[in-house]
Amino acid sequence: MNANATIEAPAAPAPDAVLRTPPAAPADAAAYFRASLAFHTDVSDVAAALTAGGAPGGPADPGFVLVDTRSTAAWEQGHIPGARHLPTALVPEQAERLLDPAVPVVTYCWGPGCNGATRAALALAERGYRVKEMLGGFEYWVREGFGYETWEGGDRRAPDPLTAPAGAADCGC
Image (cartoon, rainbow, N blue to C red; front, top):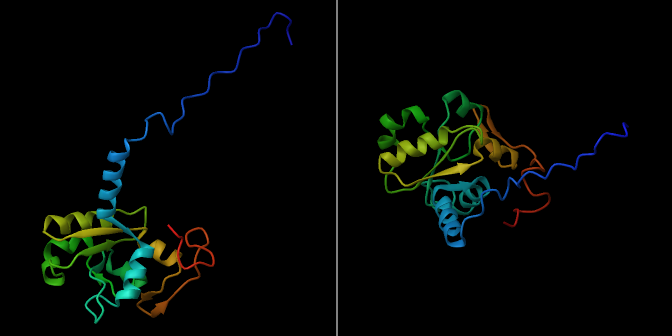
């Protein structure tokens, strides 16, 4: 090292990206999260409701209708038992024929990387339906180990330990 060289002090750490924007006030956060729950549900909650309530329209109706918003090819590849098939693009022309506006609707599509269920939920809400989106979509339904139907019949995969609690009925949250 050159005797005349200076040693520079390390740069100050960058501001914490997590707290650069401070958290909302508790009342504002509560209002936001309460509203979020009015718009979203998750795979485990839908599965529990369908198990406890039976199939939509059945003797022990869960109180909502589950709608798969994907294409026919995707539907045939696999869908949630008891779901109705209504591709997003067909909502404007077919929703009134397929869905009762008095019954809440839960939409789903492929998974977190797809916004088809969001677009379908918007189209349904604009037509007067009460609607929620199922977070995780069909991908997380399968990854959590719930049964599904294909054009060939029923199937089920082992739960993915990264998405489903190992050895527990639910995640406890």
